[in-house]
Length: 124
View 1: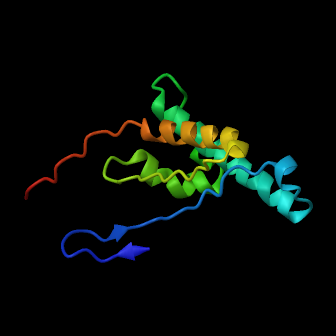
View 2: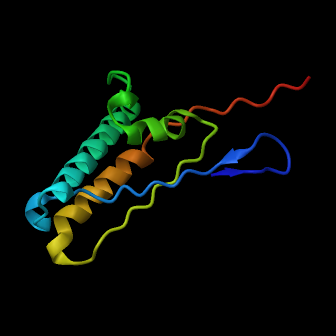
């Protein structure tokens, strides 16, 4: 979504629902739904690898080409001029405690991503 700004360059808004991890044993999915869940998990793993690479200076450079998700989020993850917001949805249910803890750990890693200083625009 491109938003027209009153002044300056157009603004972009990207919303991505990460859908959560898909445990085949918990969902009972088969066929196409099972393959879709596996694809979601692959994308989430690629995103986690990029976040880890960005939060640890000694880590190798992030591999954004590992999934379409990381390619879509590349600008938001790398740029200091982009505001990144992560919304983590969790459950208070004891049956979901493992998923809730994993979601919170994932969100914390994303929160710890360093942002470089935004350079002030040069005056002509």
